[in-house]
Amino acid sequence: MNLEKIKCFVDIVKYNSFTKAAQENYITQAAISQQIASMEAELGFPLFVRSKRGFTVTDSGKSFYESSLRLLALYSRSLSRARCIAHNLSGYISLGIWPGLDTTHTYCVIQRLLQAYPSMQITIRPGTPTELFHKYTVGKLAMAIAMPYDFSDNTISDAVIEPLLTCGWRLFVSRDHPLAQFDAVDIADIRNEKFAVQGEESIGFQTYNLTVTEQMLNHHALSPAFVVPNFDTQQMLVATNQAVMLLPECCHPTVPALFQSIRLTGYPETCTFSAIWRSHSASPVLLAYAALLKEYFAARSAGACAFPPPDAASFPACFGENTRAEA
Image (cartoon, rainbow, N blue to C red):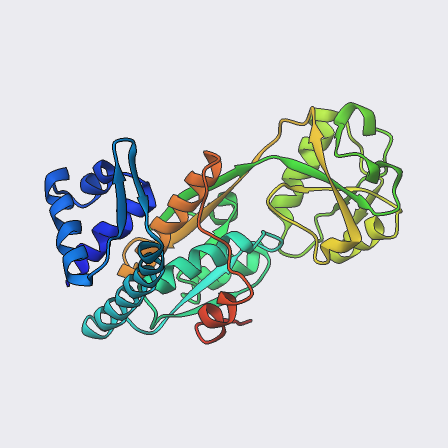
């Protein structure tokens, strides 16, 4: 029995359709029916019960389906590992991620990448936007996921900037704040709140802070009550119920459990996060990662099911040996 037959069977069960499975495998419906008949003769038991209304999977077929999924997954991993060895696709990719960005998205994509390139080592290098820019320019990062204006420097002539996600903003308050009971608030109803923002002396965040403050003041007449030197101080003021703050929807505080996130209406401002890498030095694996990032966020924006998140069982296996964080 060959893998093509097994894949045809799996696709029939997956799509609950002989026609769809035939299309997925680029064969005719008559050919896929012959494949299944051949499999059943070889196995010695029926996989389906056929009727005028369609078909159902037998109990033996269901058991064989579960085993077939594991077999195909094992084959795919083994083939990917062998290809990595054959083409010398080893080593590691260093990624820089904008501080506060929800890394669940990144981990989902890394998990999918490691399925295809299991020999790769993934390194996460944290830092402020300015630090990410510096590490990128000196070659310590293969890719950065950040706001594009952080990398709008003419010295990076070969930079590829691929927009991934455009999001709005959310209001963050302490768990004890009166607004914490609401799922959403309008910007017009919170003008008297004490907003905390980071000032120009906030090392590494100058462009971001200037943009946020200008939007608040010039577009919405929101005057900050606290201008602080860093994100830690901003979070402290909010966590201790002295102030509130705005963050991009796809970001979160350092300790999310201390805060209540509230959807913000009447505040149309947005921010975009992009993948940035060098076109002349992009490896095949890096290009594959960029393509997966684009696929993931496109599906997420369309409301479709994106890649499954790493669960407790798969996280150590996929990331424990292949992923690490570095300064």
